Image 1 (cartoon, rainbow, N blue to C red):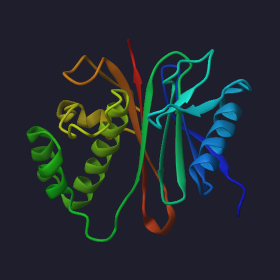
Image 2 (cartoon, rainbow, N blue to C red):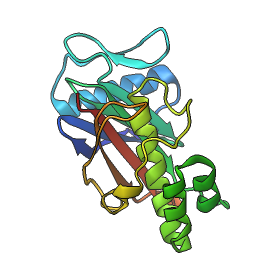
Image 3 (cartoon, one colour):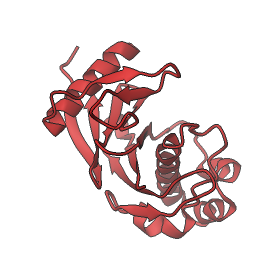
Image 4 (cartoon, rainbow, N blue to C red):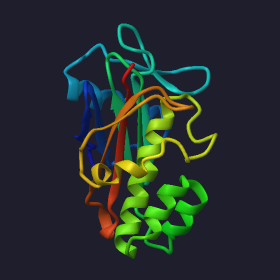
Amino acid sequence: MTAPRFEVVLAVADAIAVLVRPMPDGRAERDQIAQTALREATQRDDLSIYRRPSERPALRHPYHELGVSLSHRTDLLLAGYSPHSAVGVDIEVEDINGFDPVAFAADHFSPKEAAAVAALDSAAALEICYRLWVAKEAALKISGRGIFDGLDEPDLAAQLNLLRTDGATIHLGTGSRLPPIALAVTRLAGAADQPIYCALARDMR
């Protein structure tokens, strides 16, 4: 297997997201390579990842227990970290096999977000749908429930211009399911003309 490469792809306040590619098979191996990548990126050799009884990844003392988040797709792993606050990350690879962003948005996003996606041309609709998708999943991981209650919150319809800008920080106030958070999204080149979408969210309490 090719040796994994580490790249910091996003930063929000003191939080970072590191992309690992290619990632190893197996959860224990993924956790280990994520720990190695985060140690290298932060120069913190005492950073240690373990799994809570719920299977959620966590950090050992002296760092914030929920200051780590992991997400993987295909052979890609995204690891998020903050020393002082809960974080969430998400990664998706663009589907070139008939994914319908307008239908997906109508089924899963808020009405205003769905309307915004439907008003765009096909290429723009596809991109903004994926940006919304990863942003929402990353944010909702902070709550500990993930997407269990759906993807309608946070409603990012008023933030679409910032969401289109790679690495731009979006600040959101307290919602019914989330504390105040800051998040950022980026779109990266992927294999076979399939862009990679990454998001990082940080609890700002």
